[in-house]
Image (cartoon, rainbow, N blue to C red):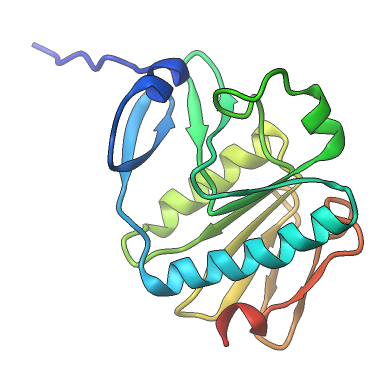
Amino acid sequence: MATQIRLVTADELLQMQSDVRCELIEGEIQEMSPSGRTHGRIASRFHSRLGRFVHENGLGEAYVADTGFRIETDPDTVLAPDAAFVTAEHEAQAIGDEGFFPGAPDLALEVISPSDRYSEVAAKVQKYLRAGTGMVVVVDPPKRTVIVHRSHADVLILKEDDVLDGGDVVPGWTLPVRELFD
């Protein structure tokens, strides 16, 4: 006899009391272990530099890792990138401040942790892009690289001496890759 899995909705996930960070992938809860020091440091540096620029230029909002973005419905998918940016235009379209953000971020950061599988990170990148995220940044700490996905076909690998450019997603914003690691 086959076991049937009960799918969870984004609203049910929001109401759950849990000490463990999770995401919802097509209705199934995926627990995430706490981040290690390197992961946290990189995400913090990225967010602080992005957030300051976004705030000073009135471009929208920068979000930290605990923010869920509901990017698919029926079944629901809620992802919580390590950092995110939403344009002022998309912020204005979101109704209410409670609950998960209704849609994809314009920019999502994912820092690869030792417990992450590259295939899982790649699947998450594809979900963001399909949902309309204009730029997905994946940081690979052991390789000291940054992989920038602007579409399924537009992928750029940056090394320590390169500079990340916000392009048309975060116009005018740049971040020397080295600053994430040193």
